[in-house]
Each structure stands twice: as C-alpha cells, then as structure tokens.
Length: 348
Image 1 (tube, rainbow, N blue to C red):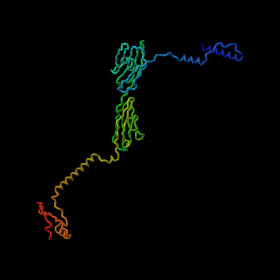
Image 2: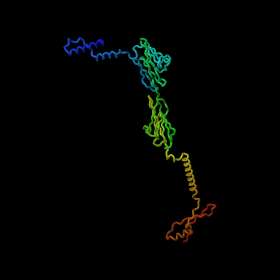
Image 3: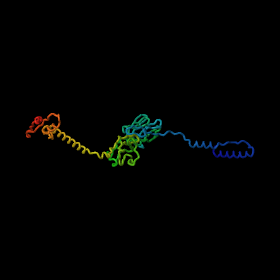
C-alpha cells in the first residue's frame, strides 16, 4: 500500500466517523490504515540499513613509540582469506626501489628488496618485524596484499623511534662564587631534540624566587647573587617519550666572609717556613749554650766575697753553713783557675 492510498482511506474513515455521530452507520468500515508512527519507523529502517561489508585491512605498530635499539612489529589485521602474497615497502606508495620484502603464500617464497637492511623479517600472516631500530627507521611503511581474485589491498603504518637519553651532566660558569656578589649559570647537557628538562635543589623542586630563573627550554638555570642557601646539591632530569635520566648531584662551593679573610696558600707556606727557621735558630742557640756553659766565668755577687762572707756569718749566731769554694782566674790567656776555700781566709 502506498502513502496516497493510505491517505485516501484515512479521509474516507474520517468521513464515516463524522456521519456516525449523526446517526447509525450503514455498515462496518471496509479497510484500516497502518498507524503513521509504525510507517515512519519502517521507512527509516529501510533508509539506514546497509548490507554488511568485509572488514578493511589495517596495520598496527607495536610499540607505538619505540626506543632506539628495540624491536618493532608492524601487525597486519583483517587480511583477506587465502591471499596470494604480501609485500612491504618503505614509504606510502608501491615503488620497487623501496621494496623491503615480499612473500608468495603458496610456495612460502620470500624475496628481499633493495630497502632490506638485514634486520627485517616477514611472518606468514603478513606481519613485519624490524629489529634493533634506529632513528633512521622512523617513517611510513606500506603493506600490499594480493588476494586470490588478483585484487590488491594496501595499508600504511608509521614507526616512531626516539633516542635513549644519556646521563645528563651539570656544568657551571663559576663553581666557586662569592656570596651576595656573583651570578651562577648552571647548564644541563647534552642538548637533545624532543627532550624536556627538570631541576631539583636539595632533593626538592625549585622554589619560587626572583633570584632563580630558567631558560625557555629549561635547560639552563641562572642563580642571581648566590648565597649559601643555594649551594645545592643540584640535580637535572631529562625526559623524552621513551626514557628518563638524571644527573649526578652538583654542589657549589660558595665563598663567604670567613673565606675572604683567609690567607692564600702562598702566604700560609711562607709563614710555616718562617716558623721553622725560627725554631731551627733557637735549637742551634740552645745547643751552643749547653755545650759552652762550663767555660764562662761566674757572675760577681755582692756580699759573696771573703770579707762579706765573714761579716754575714758573724751576724748570725751559731750559724755555720758549709764554706763555699770559689774559683779565681789566675791566667786569663790559659783559662787556669784555682780554688779558694772560705775557711782559709776566715779567722779562728
């Protein structure tokens, strides 16, 4: 039934219902129309329904982001049943000069192309393995599948290879700055592409300070008017999509007021040498005095002569200490002395 016939029936039924309100209908209605909502549903289903189609050929890169030196698989999905052969090309078009490898399924015959580097292997299901990838392997790869009806399908995959970052090293324009005076520039190297940089000081992220400034790429850290609080240790970290690496700690030797008053190495050496010379001279002088002490005349003492001794002894009753013995120089040229006893000069 078409829409115009349905409308005619609906109009006729409406006329009969109107007449029925005025009297008894002459007979039952002859036909009924399908409701509009059901009709619209059927039309919409017919409009949007399409017969199922065969799944399209696709490729998948595993892993999507590869580290340099790792292995990468280019997986083939939804390959047609009973294909005649596979072929992988470097690039996005069929070019025999860019053929990597091809395979005839029936005979399992594999042919290596000009773009084969010795690191590629083709599996029976069309998957391509590339071993020990380098950054030069980054790019597009195209899979060509020949079906049993001699029709072909093609699909392109991508490989992204990133370098494994080396251990970074922090360098400084001044490793021994003066406190409150010098500005220090720290650099995290080496510089690599597609790499982000991060800094830590004393195992913490950089504090907010007007004296700390990062470059636009965050590879360089500038410390203005450095103080002992900014001596470190500093650590820089490098990151890319496949690796993370941290530097060894780097500490600044910040010089301050005590260091400014310190003597130089040359001055300290001179002082030490002078002290040693003085000590040597004193030692020589001491040895000289010790060796020649017996050859010097005794010093004269008041009241120690014979007469003075008698007077002093007379003033002390019952005091008779041992009489001293004196030496008198007889001949100065010959160093000859004689002993003089006090008892010989004293009276009875």
